Image (cartoon, rainbow, N blue to C red; front, side):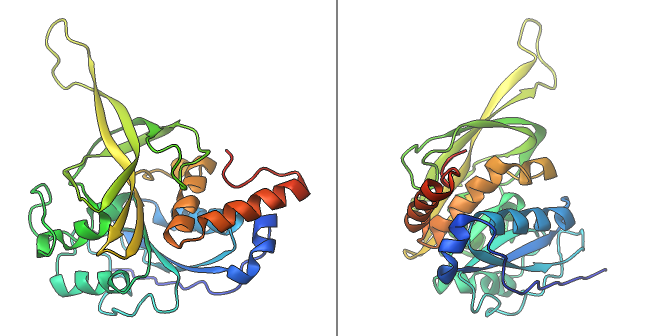
Length: 291
Protein backbone atom coordinates (compact mmCIF):
# COMPACT_ATOMS: atom_id res chain seq x y z
CA UNK A 1 0.00 0.00 0.00
CA UNK A 2 1.15 3.44 -0.79
CA UNK A 3 1.43 5.50 2.36
CA UNK A 4 2.00 9.20 2.35
CA UNK A 5 1.98 11.33 5.47
CA UNK A 6 2.50 15.01 5.05
CA UNK A 7 2.80 17.60 7.78
CA UNK A 8 2.54 21.08 6.39
CA UNK A 9 3.92 23.31 9.10
CA UNK A 10 4.44 27.05 9.01
CA UNK A 11 2.82 30.37 9.62
CA UNK A 12 -0.20 31.21 7.49
CA UNK A 13 -0.14 34.44 5.52
CA UNK A 14 -2.38 37.09 7.00
CA UNK A 15 -4.53 37.63 3.92
CA UNK A 16 -7.75 39.06 5.38
CA UNK A 17 -8.56 41.92 7.78
CA UNK A 18 -9.89 39.41 10.32
CA UNK A 19 -6.67 37.41 10.20
CA UNK A 20 -4.49 40.49 10.53
CA UNK A 21 -6.41 41.75 13.52
CA UNK A 22 -6.62 38.37 15.22
CA UNK A 23 -3.07 37.15 14.50
CA UNK A 24 -2.17 36.88 18.18
CA UNK A 25 -4.95 34.28 18.56
CA UNK A 26 -3.91 32.11 15.62
CA UNK A 27 -5.41 28.64 15.79
CA UNK A 28 -3.40 25.48 15.23
CA UNK A 29 -5.57 22.93 13.47
CA UNK A 30 -4.78 19.33 12.55
CA UNK A 31 -6.59 18.05 9.43
CA UNK A 32 -6.73 14.27 8.96
CA UNK A 33 -7.57 12.93 5.50
CA UNK A 34 -7.37 9.70 3.55
CA UNK A 35 -9.11 6.42 2.94
CA UNK A 36 -11.90 5.08 0.82
CA UNK A 37 -14.14 6.61 -1.77
CA UNK A 38 -13.19 10.30 -1.94
CA UNK A 39 -10.75 12.67 -3.64
CA UNK A 40 -8.91 13.55 -0.44
CA UNK A 41 -5.78 14.58 -2.33
CA UNK A 42 -7.75 17.55 -3.68
CA UNK A 43 -10.11 18.13 -0.78
CA UNK A 44 -7.39 18.43 1.85
CA UNK A 45 -5.96 21.42 -0.03
CA UNK A 46 -9.39 22.99 -0.59
CA UNK A 47 -10.07 22.81 3.13
CA UNK A 48 -6.67 24.11 4.18
CA UNK A 49 -6.79 27.06 1.80
CA UNK A 50 -10.43 27.84 2.57
CA UNK A 51 -9.99 27.83 6.33
CA UNK A 52 -6.74 29.78 6.37
CA UNK A 53 -8.31 32.38 4.06
CA UNK A 54 -11.21 32.95 6.44
CA UNK A 55 -9.61 32.99 9.88
CA UNK A 56 -6.22 33.28 11.51
CA UNK A 57 -5.19 29.64 11.51
CA UNK A 58 -2.48 27.24 10.46
CA UNK A 59 -3.85 23.94 9.17
CA UNK A 60 -1.34 21.10 9.40
CA UNK A 61 -2.13 17.88 7.58
CA UNK A 62 -1.85 14.18 8.24
CA UNK A 63 -2.74 12.48 4.96
CA UNK A 64 -2.47 9.13 3.24
CA UNK A 65 -3.14 8.41 -0.42
CA UNK A 66 -4.31 4.92 0.54
CA UNK A 67 -7.85 4.29 -0.81
CA UNK A 68 -8.88 1.39 1.41
CA UNK A 69 -11.32 1.38 4.34
CA UNK A 70 -8.30 0.80 6.58
CA UNK A 71 -6.02 3.72 5.68
CA UNK A 72 -2.67 3.54 7.51
CA UNK A 73 -2.88 6.98 9.10
CA UNK A 74 0.07 8.03 11.24
CA UNK A 75 -2.21 8.92 14.17
CA UNK A 76 -3.00 5.26 14.87
CA UNK A 77 -1.24 3.97 17.93
CA UNK A 78 -0.32 7.47 19.09
CA UNK A 79 -2.88 8.85 21.56
CA UNK A 80 -0.85 12.09 21.77
CA UNK A 81 -1.19 12.82 18.05
CA UNK A 82 -3.05 16.10 18.70
CA UNK A 83 -0.68 17.50 21.30
CA UNK A 84 -0.19 21.22 20.78
CA UNK A 85 -3.26 21.65 18.56
CA UNK A 86 -6.38 23.68 19.30
CA UNK A 87 -8.68 21.48 17.21
CA UNK A 88 -8.71 18.30 15.11
CA UNK A 89 -10.66 17.95 11.86
CA UNK A 90 -11.54 14.34 11.08
CA UNK A 91 -12.12 13.98 7.34
CA UNK A 92 -10.91 10.41 6.97
CA UNK A 93 -12.91 7.45 5.61
CA UNK A 94 -11.90 4.47 7.73
CA UNK A 95 -14.99 2.29 8.04
CA UNK A 96 -12.84 -0.84 8.26
CA UNK A 97 -10.91 0.25 11.37
CA UNK A 98 -12.58 -1.63 14.22
CA UNK A 99 -9.76 -2.30 16.69
CA UNK A 100 -10.90 -1.02 20.06
CA UNK A 101 -7.43 0.12 21.16
CA UNK A 102 -6.88 2.08 17.94
CA UNK A 103 -10.26 3.79 18.25
CA UNK A 104 -9.64 4.69 21.87
CA UNK A 105 -6.36 6.25 20.76
CA UNK A 106 -8.12 8.33 18.12
CA UNK A 107 -10.59 9.51 20.76
CA UNK A 108 -7.94 10.21 23.42
CA UNK A 109 -7.34 13.91 22.58
CA UNK A 110 -11.08 14.60 22.54
CA UNK A 111 -11.53 12.90 25.90
CA UNK A 112 -8.88 15.30 27.17
CA UNK A 113 -10.87 18.27 25.88
CA UNK A 114 -9.44 19.03 22.42
CA UNK A 115 -12.39 20.07 20.22
CA UNK A 116 -13.28 18.20 17.06
CA UNK A 117 -14.83 18.92 13.67
CA UNK A 118 -16.02 15.95 11.64
CA UNK A 119 -16.77 16.01 7.93
CA UNK A 120 -18.76 13.61 5.77
CA UNK A 121 -17.28 10.09 5.90
CA UNK A 122 -15.85 10.67 9.37
CA UNK A 123 -19.38 9.72 10.48
CA UNK A 124 -18.88 6.23 9.03
CA UNK A 125 -15.47 5.53 10.59
CA UNK A 126 -14.31 3.39 13.49
CA UNK A 127 -17.20 0.96 13.66
CA UNK A 128 -17.35 -1.80 16.24
CA UNK A 129 -20.31 -4.08 15.63
CA UNK A 130 -23.29 -3.59 13.33
CA UNK A 131 -23.36 0.02 12.12
CA UNK A 132 -27.15 0.07 11.82
CA UNK A 133 -27.83 -1.21 15.33
CA UNK A 134 -28.57 1.70 17.72
CA UNK A 135 -25.53 2.35 19.91
CA UNK A 136 -25.33 3.10 23.61
CA UNK A 137 -22.77 5.22 25.43
CA UNK A 138 -19.96 3.54 27.35
CA UNK A 139 -20.01 0.53 25.02
CA UNK A 140 -17.45 -0.35 22.32
CA UNK A 141 -20.19 -0.12 19.68
CA UNK A 142 -20.97 3.38 20.85
CA UNK A 143 -17.45 4.81 21.34
CA UNK A 144 -17.24 6.79 18.09
CA UNK A 145 -20.95 7.61 17.84
CA UNK A 146 -20.94 9.02 21.37
CA UNK A 147 -18.14 11.37 20.34
CA UNK A 148 -19.98 12.42 17.19
CA UNK A 149 -23.34 12.80 18.90
CA UNK A 150 -25.22 11.19 15.99
CA UNK A 151 -25.11 7.67 14.60
CA UNK A 152 -25.29 7.08 10.84
CA UNK A 153 -24.88 3.81 8.99
CA UNK A 154 -25.22 4.59 5.30
CA UNK A 155 -26.51 6.82 2.52
CA UNK A 156 -28.59 6.81 -0.63
CA UNK A 157 -27.77 7.93 -4.18
CA UNK A 158 -26.03 11.14 -5.09
CA UNK A 159 -28.64 13.83 -5.72
CA UNK A 160 -28.82 17.52 -4.77
CA UNK A 161 -29.58 18.17 -1.12
CA UNK A 162 -31.61 21.16 0.03
CA UNK A 163 -30.10 22.36 3.32
CA UNK A 164 -32.35 24.15 5.80
CA UNK A 165 -30.84 25.69 8.92
CA UNK A 166 -32.95 24.88 11.97
CA UNK A 167 -31.35 27.20 14.53
CA UNK A 168 -31.20 30.61 12.85
CA UNK A 169 -29.92 32.29 16.02
CA UNK A 170 -27.22 29.71 16.74
CA UNK A 171 -23.73 31.27 16.69
CA UNK A 172 -22.69 28.87 13.91
CA UNK A 173 -25.66 29.38 11.59
CA UNK A 174 -26.56 32.98 12.37
CA UNK A 175 -26.60 34.98 9.16
CA UNK A 176 -26.19 31.95 6.90
CA UNK A 177 -28.79 31.23 4.22
CA UNK A 178 -30.37 27.93 3.24
CA UNK A 179 -28.89 26.50 0.06
CA UNK A 180 -28.96 23.52 -2.27
CA UNK A 181 -25.86 21.47 -2.99
CA UNK A 182 -24.72 19.80 -6.18
CA UNK A 183 -25.16 16.02 -6.19
CA UNK A 184 -24.31 14.83 -2.69
CA UNK A 185 -24.94 11.88 -0.38
CA UNK A 186 -27.65 12.16 2.27
CA UNK A 187 -26.48 10.19 5.30
CA UNK A 188 -29.18 8.45 7.33
CA UNK A 189 -29.81 9.09 11.02
CA UNK A 190 -29.95 5.98 13.19
CA UNK A 191 -29.81 7.81 16.51
CA UNK A 192 -29.13 11.28 17.89
CA UNK A 193 -27.65 11.34 21.39
CA UNK A 194 -29.01 13.56 24.16
CA UNK A 195 -25.77 15.56 24.18
CA UNK A 196 -26.25 16.63 20.55
CA UNK A 197 -28.18 19.52 19.02
CA UNK A 198 -29.31 19.57 15.37
CA UNK A 199 -28.35 22.59 13.26
CA UNK A 200 -29.44 21.74 9.71
CA UNK A 201 -31.76 19.36 7.91
CA UNK A 202 -31.18 17.99 4.43
CA UNK A 203 -33.97 17.15 2.01
CA UNK A 204 -33.34 15.06 -1.08
CA UNK A 205 -35.60 13.80 -3.86
CA UNK A 206 -34.76 10.19 -4.73
CA UNK A 207 -36.06 8.12 -7.60
CA UNK A 208 -38.12 5.11 -6.54
CA UNK A 209 -36.80 1.79 -7.75
CA UNK A 210 -40.16 0.25 -8.62
CA UNK A 211 -42.96 2.80 -8.33
CA UNK A 212 -46.49 1.43 -8.57
CA UNK A 213 -48.84 2.65 -11.26
CA UNK A 214 -50.04 6.14 -10.46
CA UNK A 215 -47.40 6.75 -7.79
CA UNK A 216 -44.86 9.57 -8.04
CA UNK A 217 -41.54 8.49 -9.53
CA UNK A 218 -39.63 10.19 -6.70
CA UNK A 219 -39.85 10.26 -2.95
CA UNK A 220 -38.57 12.76 -0.42
CA UNK A 221 -35.87 11.78 2.04
CA UNK A 222 -34.85 13.87 5.03
CA UNK A 223 -32.07 13.67 7.61
CA UNK A 224 -30.12 15.90 9.98
CA UNK A 225 -26.95 16.93 8.12
CA UNK A 226 -25.23 19.17 10.70
CA UNK A 227 -25.19 19.32 14.49
CA UNK A 228 -23.16 20.13 17.58
CA UNK A 229 -22.27 17.80 20.42
CA UNK A 230 -20.83 18.08 23.90
CA UNK A 231 -18.65 15.02 24.30
CA UNK A 232 -18.38 13.61 27.82
CA UNK A 233 -19.77 16.83 29.22
CA UNK A 234 -16.87 19.08 28.21
CA UNK A 235 -15.56 18.79 24.64
CA UNK A 236 -17.18 20.80 21.84
CA UNK A 237 -17.74 18.86 18.62
CA UNK A 238 -19.20 20.11 15.32
CA UNK A 239 -20.13 17.73 12.50
CA UNK A 240 -21.67 17.79 9.04
CA UNK A 241 -22.37 14.85 6.76
CA UNK A 242 -22.14 17.11 3.70
CA UNK A 243 -18.89 17.11 1.71
CA UNK A 244 -18.59 14.19 -0.69
CA UNK A 245 -17.70 15.98 -3.91
CA UNK A 246 -14.98 18.53 -4.65
CA UNK A 247 -17.47 21.12 -5.90
CA UNK A 248 -19.15 21.06 -2.50
CA UNK A 249 -15.94 21.15 -0.47
CA UNK A 250 -14.73 24.12 -2.51
CA UNK A 251 -18.05 25.97 -2.27
CA UNK A 252 -17.79 29.23 -0.29
CA UNK A 253 -21.03 28.41 1.53
CA UNK A 254 -19.64 25.10 2.70
CA UNK A 255 -16.31 26.58 3.75
CA UNK A 256 -18.05 29.42 5.60
CA UNK A 257 -20.17 26.87 7.48
CA UNK A 258 -17.25 24.62 8.39
CA UNK A 259 -15.16 27.61 9.47
CA UNK A 260 -17.91 28.83 11.76
CA UNK A 261 -18.07 25.32 13.22
CA UNK A 262 -14.34 25.55 13.93
CA UNK A 263 -14.75 28.91 15.64
CA UNK A 264 -17.62 27.64 17.76
CA UNK A 265 -15.79 24.47 18.76
CA UNK A 266 -12.77 26.47 19.91
CA UNK A 267 -14.91 29.06 21.72
CA UNK A 268 -13.89 31.93 19.42
CA UNK A 269 -16.92 32.63 17.30
CA UNK A 270 -18.13 35.69 19.22
CA UNK A 271 -14.70 37.33 19.14
CA UNK A 272 -14.31 36.49 15.46
CA UNK A 273 -17.65 38.08 14.60
CA UNK A 274 -16.77 41.21 16.54
CA UNK A 275 -13.41 41.51 14.80
CA UNK A 276 -14.97 40.78 11.43
CA UNK A 277 -17.57 43.51 11.85
CA UNK A 278 -14.96 46.01 12.97
CA UNK A 279 -12.69 45.13 10.06
CA UNK A 280 -15.60 45.38 7.63
CA UNK A 281 -16.32 48.93 8.79
CA UNK A 282 -12.72 49.89 8.12
CA UNK A 283 -12.16 48.01 4.87
CA UNK A 284 -15.64 47.98 3.37
CA UNK A 285 -15.70 44.17 3.21
CA UNK A 286 -18.52 41.99 4.49
CA UNK A 287 -18.42 40.50 8.04
CA UNK A 288 -17.59 36.81 8.38
CA UNK A 289 -21.18 35.86 9.10
CA UNK A 290 -22.49 37.18 5.81
CA UNK A 291 -22.85 35.03 2.66
